[in-house]
Length: 313
Length: 266
Ligand SMILES: Nc1ncnc2c1ncn2[C@@H]1O[C@H](COP(=O)(O)OP(=O)(O)O)[C@@H](O)[C@H]1O
Ligand SMILES: [Mg+2]
Image 1 (cartoon, helix red, strand yellow):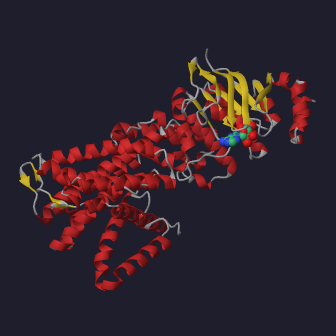
Image 2: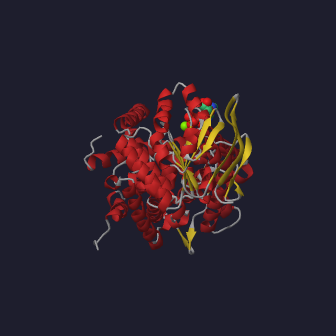
């Protein structure tokens, strides 16, 4: 028996990296960036299963992130619920909502599906802005601190540990799924819906399931975000934020779990690094993105893997 | 009644009557060939029975159950599956994974089970991998099990589709032109595979094929379809003696088919 199974190696490396990062970048500001990356990466892992693996586009996932944020804010702030309970309530509400709207719209394909998910996202964000009595309107609202087993989660270190732990579990689960018959069916329906159906795969049900699951994951990340920043605004549910998630997985690599992490890291770190260019920040950012997508068609992680196994391009 | 029974099946596309009142039964075993010139409605019949198209009219019964208009994945659970005339391969997967996907209904395909990936799932996957390799051996693709599917040649992809369809352990299997584009020796191998599958896995095969020599050699029954209607049905010798068949083939531009019918008949 091998001492360490080879397919577990990437997960072990991720664990080591997650442990090492806060010691390398331990400043308050740096930690807050790492927390932001981790939260975005959690969302991206889910969206990548939906978009990269199952081939179903969504331009509305930030709205599900937003629902999670507001569920945590409202249930803990106005109803006095425990933060963990509020978090799970948010996941449940978001998943059920996503399954309900997903059922009709996932019959659409390509551009039409993109438009429909965009519409869903816009409506949700609009509701978050309009229902000011609950959500605080366009200005957002403050969020109570998260307490776990009576302990208040406070400070960047604590939040880093929680987010890193959550990300690790999410990656572990996503890797398991990808190598399971369920994940195989997701890849299959992306490649050929008729052949998948002929093999007994309920294509539509699978699409709705991964849509709802990825929405639930986005909601979970939204809850973490709300508590970590102690504040939520409707911007988190915006179309721009949805697009940002999709850009992250395209840059990191469609269909690659680790690509989701790399993409999230790059899209969050790059603007910070480029901010020294002040006026030219957006220009440089755009040009770099175009270069990455142009030079590494398949995204960063899949391209590196191809090079590593000697397949060239 | 076991087997498939098609009653007055009609499929119209606007003005085109692709199927115009077809009555047909396929038994629960054996090989039943469905032949006819291009555009006769053979693929449409498969699509209408396997849930790709909703029939305009008519009824389809399988083992006594009304399966008219059931979606394809439901039919698969009942044991009805198919291959595709224009290849439908999972291009992003390996050859082995294509066949494993064919085992979907037999696998631990639940979301939570996949998420946790427990020992039962791992064990089941190992069993299915062995079974999949067996099917690949059957269609002479075992050596390419770990190749990406898009690295296979056309004839190999046709065989891969057959292996994947057999993975579902169907009771009724539609093969839509499974040997089109294959070399003569590949055709012989495939004929063997189809015959063995029909005999050993107790699957009833509906074979759509243009190669008359192959059809006459492997089929227990033959049905000739032309312009959405049944022209003739019976044993191979009955059908090839049917003057309507010979006239119909001679009447089409596909004279090579007519020649084949003549060659086999004569
Ligand atoms: N999806 C479709 N839309 C419109 N016409 C179709 C469609 N599918 C098949 N047809 C028409 O139905 C007829 C039968 O086609 P088909 O079943 O593919 O024939 P075969 O498989 O016997 O060559 C043809 O005239 C074809 O053009
Ligand atoms: Mg056809």
